[in-house]
Length: 194
Image (cartoon, rainbow, N blue to C red):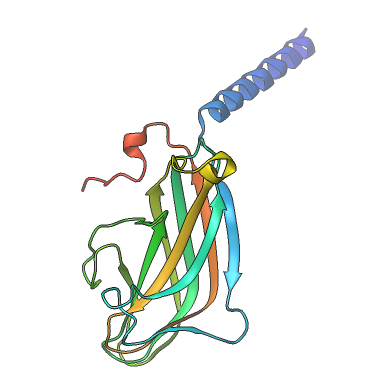
């Protein structure tokens, strides 16, 4: 009787664990990767000189691609991971993310020279080979002006700019575009409270 009771108990426990795991999965909003690319692993760098500022020419393009995203997704997470340099003490490397022609976050940050941009590196003398990593979050929806599969293609761009004081450079770049559906759309890339 003890062995049969133990076997029955283990079987019930296994069923309970399976049901709980299945229930958790049905409520989870899984993150999916829609693009994964690398650039400039060839001994070269991309430069944004003193004239390549957000105000003068909207910086220099780092990455531009059409990324296909399921119609159910309402959020994209665009990640830049790279190595960067600045040329002198007052040079800043500024970056922006643009999806479908709109900044991923149009807000103003403390040091950036324009809204929608963020400073990820600032010189204290020549700064060589520093790690740069940032993720933008932006809301999306199928493109109403497009037809068929084009409704699901989103134009994703990353750009680099200098603050005008010197040259900002970037190399050994990885770009990842992920997304998912946030059930409560009001909480999708929403401003947090402090």
